[in-house]
Length: 249
Ligand code: IPE
Ligand code: IPE
Ligand code: MG
Image (cartoon, rainbow, N blue to C red; front, top):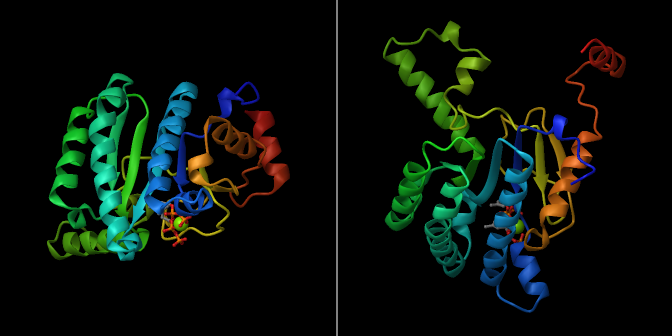
């Protein structure tokens, strides 16, 4: 942590928490054992993010495609979500953390939906870390939802297609209240985005690590931020332009 430049932290970090299953299999355990340990890593990373003052943390917990996993794993994950949320809310609330959920939540079982709704309303006034959980989430689904909603506004005569620019489009995404992530971390050695925040990650720095999610902790999190801080974010400009901007800053 002492190697971090606290004045140049990303505002928003997004994480694809991958490798629970493989981690468990490597321990000779079943996949759900890995998911349980994955929750502990979530706790550690949320604590680390709070400690250094990260404003937004988005965690990919379950994709739309994950519904196609074996039913026992899906059911196990659903009950783990409900248990974890109910157990963790008092602590999250005490730490001024606000919970948000993005994804096609209509697909979740009633019990899970209720737990989510209650946790978001309990923490609704909190101004510390904004913790966004992507659950039953698919970025293509989200983008299509946005297109539908804009089409409906046009049909209702509330919107002129000429007004549809980037700022307007972003308002129809489920992430409309959050800035784009500057840093995206994926664990467990997969080098892909798996339908996560396709629009929002346009200029994010991508960081991949071999570490399985249940083995990922505070130090690994800080290491990812250090890697981010060593990158030069050019946004299409040249390196010389960027350095000139810093001098003029
Ligand atoms: C990530 O770990 C958690 C979820 C997708 C729910 P995995 O379950 O994908 O673990 P691996 O990739 O099979 O090791
Ligand atoms: C992505 O992980 C989704 C989550 C971490 C929740 P997967 O393990 O489902 O992704 P793929 O199938 O390897 O691309
Ligand atoms: Mg995986």
